[in-house]
Image 1 (cartoon, helix red, strand yellow):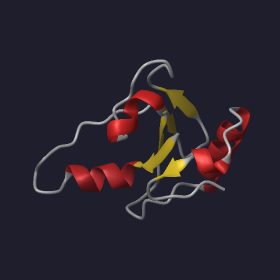
Image 2 (cartoon, rainbow, N blue to C red):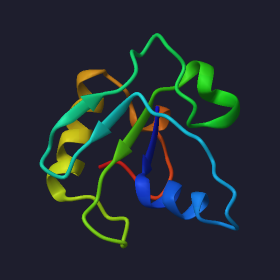
Image 3 (cartoon, rainbow, N blue to C red):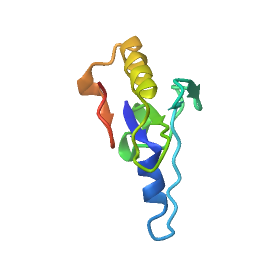
Image 4 (cartoon, one colour):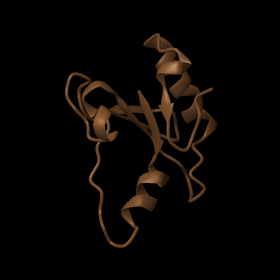
Length: 98
């Protein structure tokens, strides 16, 4: 499981005009909604060499700080607990799961 904020991807996309194309399985919104973009059995291109055996989750945020809302954090935590994923199986870019 890989968690990223879209601020990280936006920063990477804007570096030198070279665009990086990426996808994720889920997007968690500021209001606490979850949108599934790609079924978990399909590959999302979000984590390089581990794309084939990881699930990508994007967290939305309100501004350029890259910090999601507390609702987004709480829902992400609940989402991971439902799937019985221990902390050591979660790799985060830009945030750490609670």
